[in-house]
Length: 349
Image 1 (tube, one colour):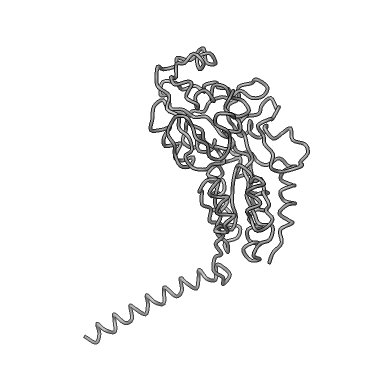
Image 2: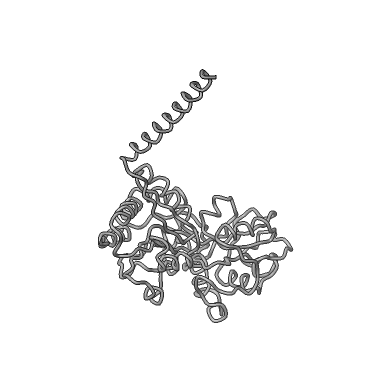
């Protein structure tokens, strides 16, 4: 019996010793300090990029963990203003009335270029359909309800379009993706602005709503005949067919990193970094392209603030390669320099 007790006691001591060694090893690897977690949230448009940046940055500075929550741009702005997150993210920059709700000056930093794409589920159609703003507006307003409608056929005369009902899929949550999409339709589709308006959240006339880009993705994939709008990375990652959209030069352009980067190529001066790319006149530009933004307080708590600024400086420099790998456009040099200069104005308490 004594032998059994001694054996049990020795095993317990050995296990305890191993746990202590593991703990001390992890503690030393982190330089004797616990990991600092910094929470932000908002844009699902930029979520794949920010999540990848956060993972990669752990290899640069393992003392900090960037915890990004893809809650949608509207929720991201609300949470940021309410101080429940340390930073926010939106594809639709904060408007003056939103900025006034904050208790402190705000910086809005562009981080990359994304694109809103039109995707559809037509098993018999494997080519990229051609669309323009008028047609897209007619579909999303319920005027065009069948895939073999003459207005779709006119732009795609060589495609055998099915006699299949159209199911519209849209964002049900407040979304920067919706803001960019409806701004585009307000410019290009007759009567859209007066009937439906533009912004992060509007009332669509027809269709099914899904939360986040993932929600719209699910609706499109599950419903033959469905059409929806989402960020390009989501569509590409899930191998969805994307429409070629007529740009401001009358050229139909398929979404690509090259095409959305071209959308920012004709900007030579910056008065305000909150600039729309929908008016691009570059011949190769994809017409529904947009910057995506990180929202920051200009005065931050010192420890977390310095870590966050370190992360963003890295993202605007080394992280731009990752952006292109994930099908975002890297920031043009003029915007990257302006963004870095803006970050340098942050003060710490």
